[in-house]
Length: 321
Image 1 (cartoon, helix red, strand yellow):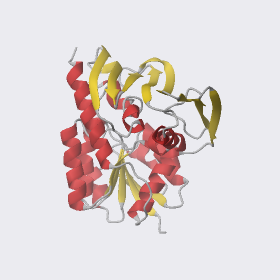
Image 2 (tube, one colour):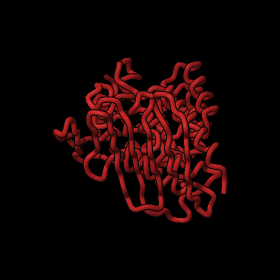
Image 3 (cartoon, helix red, strand yellow):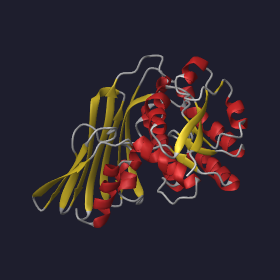
């Protein structure tokens, strides 16, 4: 198939560390152009040297077929909508919008323009993540009774945009799309109730540690996300017949490294091993093949909308400092 021509909107750390190497290795996609207000940064991830300092100029380029958006959170929705109306397919960093109403608006534009619109939750493409869902759905663990997840890291520079509430900062939007929402997809989006939220606020006005407990499909979910706790990961699912847990300290960031899944049923333990892979490439390649008419799995927009509604409910419980 002809390689999909990507245009990058934003040339920050995530674009350079993740999608640039992923698409550079791809046989089905290529980075055609990059748009950034910083031309020097853009040139570092533009193999063809095609750089725009205006997002609108990139969107007006007829050779750009799809865009990857990695701007601050508050800019995701307006650029995604503008891109789709310009005829481009869109892979957008999480979160897609600042609330469920915004996400629903963007989904409506996707349907109207017939452009593919996907949230770049790369962890969902990881074979281990897909295996977790498969094991739970099989009933091997029995009825799920408790799910515990955690994703934290220690420290942000004071000038980091993740601390700016005006730009959609805060840990719920940063790591919540990994650990906080994991029980939702693990339980196939069963009904959620009894949401309880405990927050530690940063002086800038963003949530720096957010613990969310809730009931999902009869199971108790206990989740943690923080930018002020030493790097810690866990993903544990307990059922009436057994449990599963991710091995190592990499539940939500296993990238280009081998990983494991420990499954215990009736007291017998087995370790499932997963080869090193690049889930960013799995995601972007699947996206490219779907654009070209393939039937690869892409995270459905409906799931992104359910995540956004869940976050709305959490924010409603948070209050403000």
